[in-house]
Structure formats: structure tokens, C-alpha cells
Length: 85
Image 1 (cartoon, rainbow, N blue to C red):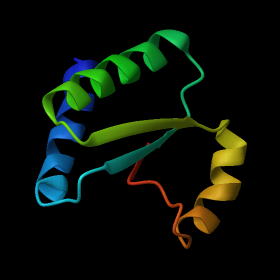
Image 2: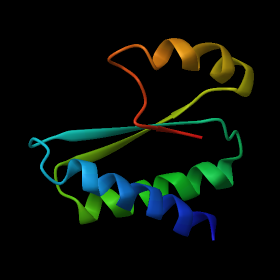
Image 3: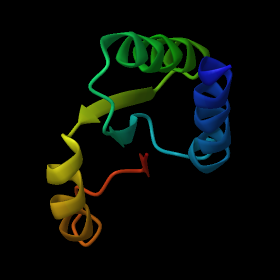
Image 4: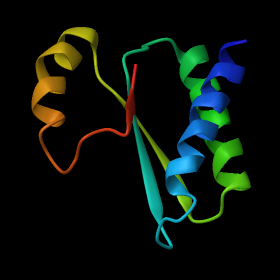
């Protein structure tokens, strides 16, 4: 179920990347320290990249407290995440 939601998230982003330049990077920022969940994210990202040539999914992890502290600043920079959870 979680994998379907993650793949759906990437599919939604496809609408924004359809007319994108040759290399598009989707930056995903998450707070899950659980290896099994990270593996699901990576699997979904790999599946999405395979279906969408020219799109790279970059998964970034931040510990919960660091996430809360850094997110407001990140959202104001060019390095802001495309998606966060």
C-alpha cells in the first residue's frame, strides 16, 4: 500500500516534468530512519526513473529534529526539495 502511494506521488510529479529539459531531478526529502521504508522509496524511485527517461529521483534523509529545523530554510533556496514527507 505504501509503495503504491509513493509511486502515485512520483506519477503526479510526471505532470510537472513532462515538458522538462533533458535531465530533471526530483528531490524527495523524508524523515524515515527505517531501512525497509527507505528500500520502498528507492524501489519506487527506480521504477519511476525507468519509466521516465531523463528524470532522476534524489532521495534525501534528515532526522526528524533536523528536518523541522532545516525545512523552512531549505524551502527558500534553489536547493529546495520537490517533495517532502
